Image (cartoon, rainbow, N blue to C red; front, top):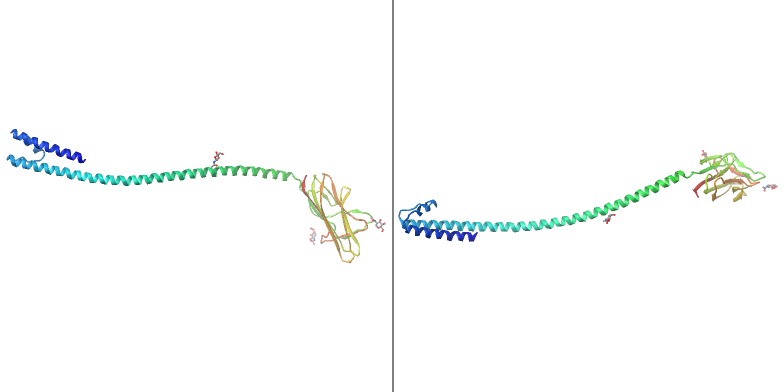
Amino acid sequence: MRRAAVFLALLLCLLWTGAQGEDGAGTGKKEGEFDIQGVKAAHDQSSSQTQMSTDVWAELKEIRDMAIEHRIKIQRLEQDNTALEAKMSSSEKEVEELQRENTDLLARVTASENKSTALESRMSSSEKEVEELQRENADRPQVAFSAGLTDSGSVGPFTTDTTLKYSKVFTNIGQAYSPTTGIFTAPVRGAYYFRINAWEESGQTWTGVELFHNDQRKMRFNDYNDGGGYVSASNGILLQLEKGDVVYIVLIGNYSIYDDSNNRTIFSGFLLFPV
Ligand SMILES: *[C@@H]1O[C@H](CO)[C@@H](O)[C@H](O)[C@H]1NC(C)=O
Ligand SMILES: *[C@@H]1O[C@H](CO)[C@@H](O)[C@H](O)[C@H]1NC(C)=O
Ligand SMILES: *[C@@H]1O[C@H](CO)[C@@H](O)[C@H](O)[C@H]1NC(C)=O
């Protein structure tokens, strides 16, 4: 810009010099040209020259002022540019940071999704297991019973061992216990738990029972009511039974046993699990 201004100034000087020369030749034609530039030609030659010189200097000054103005503008633009560059570079940094964060988040999301998928598959396999267990459970026979002996006091003594008929049925899920015979029949092969007790409170007597698995005795317990008050004894046993095996309680010969509405003497059993 500055160079252009200097070049323009030189060009004007040359034009001016040329105009003077041509005027010297007496054509007077160039005066008209200066008219175009807004210079009012004077009739007096020297006055005209002075006028032209003044105009040229005025124009040069104007051009110089323009140049200065442009330089200021350029400086301002440069400053603006620097500011913009700074802003741009900080924006670029922000963009980079955001991109990094995005990548990070994406990785985390992917990891989460993976975890979700893994959890879903675990969940579905767990659900399958639960369903299977529920099916197994539903297929498993439910066997549990509990029965009291009688409401009518002493039973016995009898001269022989006698199978007791616990007639007061509290619970008989699966109907494996018969209150009419007093016999429990295993519906499936499995582990079964039984619990019995004996109570006696009539005089100085022996009480005691035996638990039979089929024709085999598995348990016997007894006690003597020597104080004339009451006596009691109890025991439990876990047995592995085959399907159709029987379990029952026998009152020992010459012994007695007692029960009333207090449900003092109870025979209970349940299937722990099939085997
Ligand atoms: C997510 O799972 C895919 C496919 O199983 C695997 O290629 C990728 O590496 C896993 N990504 C993460 C973050 O665990
Ligand atoms: C019961 O007692 C009688 C008379 O003492 C005896 O003969 C009988 O053998 C006893 N019964 C049992 C099962 O022990
Ligand atoms: C004994 O069992 C019967 C029948 O379930 C019940 O009505 C009664 O209250 C029980 N007796 C006692 C003392 O709990």
